[in-house]
Image (cartoon, rainbow, N blue to C red; front, side, top):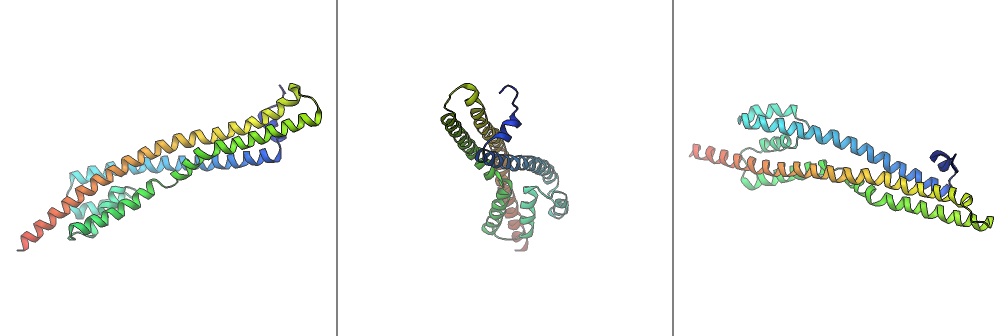
Length: 216
């Protein structure tokens, strides 16, 4: 047993345990791909949103701001501004309805793939546990066939079974941590969008009121 490596134990595992390990590996690979993607995306979103907010506070000339939004391709705030700019002159309720739809789309984009991380975090430990239970069952059946219960007989089967549990935890822990982390960052961006919507609505309403007053 002392000479056995983890790789050796995996290669010697039964077909069911191997299948469980392959499933867990797929979950882990997809989870890490999502983690890397979400980190890059949210970092870019927050960087562009901060830059757009600075531009918005410095310059309230909407024509110039609209031209500058081309630089902010992933910023939810820039997308909200583009939507508001396209309906300038509309009534307050129409403005709020349009911005609400944009917020819903941006929220969906920010939270995309987080469900998979949550599923991985809650499911993979049980998948690993299934592989463990199956491996231990095979170990006990092996004891029955051999007719002996020495450590040399039991240890390899138990070890290969426990690898499935370790693999399940290895897939679940990063997914749970990443899910909570990205959900928190997404929520901050959503709150920022809601505040910006209110500011845009008020600005458009004041602008429309001033335009109407000027025409009377």
